Image 1 (cartoon, rainbow, N blue to C red):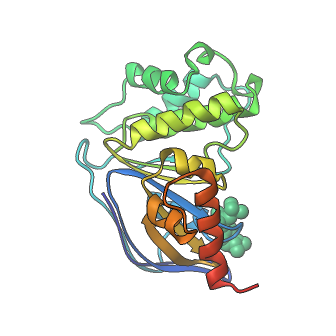
Image 2: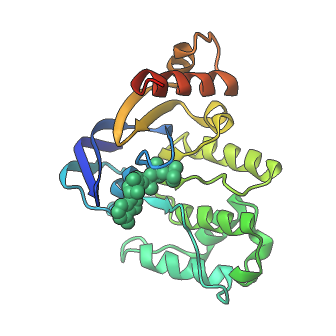
Length: 239
Ligand SMILES: Nc1ncnc2c1ncn2[C@@H]1O[C@H](COP(=O)(O)OP(=O)(O)OP(=O)(O)O)[C@@H](O)[C@H]1O
């Protein structure tokens, strides 16, 4: 559903890529140290950063032309705006004449993140975790075939983290989901595939089981993912 071909993105002195990848149905976790290029790659996938070389191809089945759903790392909204009005505005921006996004779809997105009873609240009155969940709802409205979530579990309490993981897993059943995280538990719980970046380069692409194997683990667990990640990154950058 997302095809990355020879993709290179420059931001100041930083260069990401070249990246070649095919992100099909399912959850792909994007891992890497701070500054490795995860947000840069996600920005290029959703079209907010222009490639300096190569291409991002989106192959969507449903409403043609609907942009990928995107939770940016620094998602924010005006404090005084009510949640429902913010999402209605976002829905209007994402609607096309042939595929308008209805209030029912906005309600479904709010229910998906457990915020249906906060629809009338002002954004500034929500807790940090709830604001993050509004950002996830914002990424879901209109049921895009491609959903890109930049560190969606940051700031969530353990219950909300678990619920959000379940939601991400469910989304991955019929769409391409790209999710960045620093939490090995997120990867072990929901991802099928993993891509690891180090200093702008792709240093691993494969299944979660293959990553666990890098740590010599026969089964997938948070610990195996963490050790696999460290093995991959340390292989590349010797201490
Ligand atoms: N607006 C910008 N202008 C210039 N360079 C930038 C800009 N934004 C990010 N960078 C640089 O791009 C590189 C990659 O940043 P990016 O945000 O993609 O990393 P990341 O893997 O998402 O990191 P983190 O885990 O800290 O969120 C960093 O070296 C950063 O300094």
